[in-house]
Length: 180
Image 1 (tube, rainbow, N blue to C red):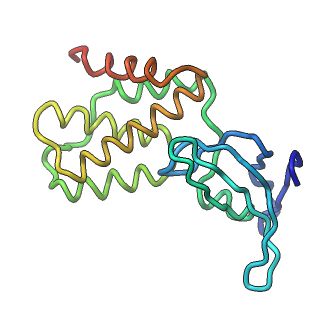
Image 2 (image 1 turned 135 degrees about the horizontal axis):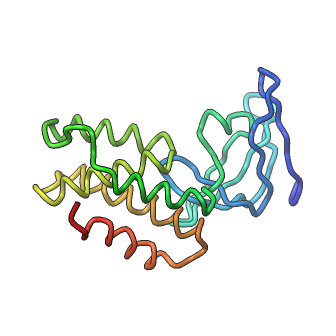
C-alpha cells in the first residue's frame, strides 16, 4: 500500500482526513510522527486498515485504525501561518486562577488539554505552568506536564517552520523573559 492514499468513509458518510506514507501527522499527547506504512490487519475477524505512525521524538510506533482517525485526534502539523497564533496564545495572560487550584486539580485539567491534541491547548498548558513556575515550585506531576507540553510545542513548531528546535525554544523563552 506504500504511496497510496487511503480514503475511508465514516458512518455519517463524511470524508475523514487521509494521510499518505511519508506524511507528517500529530498524534495527541505524543507529538509529531511520520506515517511509515498503511497496512491491513485482521482484528476480531474483521479486516481493518491501519496507519503505522512512528513518533519522531522517541521512535515509538503507533498503529491507528484508519476508521478511528477522527476520534483519536490524528491531524496534520500546523501550517506556518498558525505559528504566530500559537505564540499569541502563549503571550496572553491566563484568565483562570491557576494558583488558587490544588496541584492535582490543575494536573487533571492540563492533562485533559494535552490529550485533546490541539497545539493551542498545549500552548495554554505551557503558558500557565511557565507563569506558575515563576511564583512557586511546580509539583512533580506539573513538572512532567511542563516538560511534555514543551516537547510537544517545540517539536510541532520546529516541524511546521522547518527549523531547528533550539531556535524555537529560544523564541519561546523570549516570550516569558519579557515582563508583561
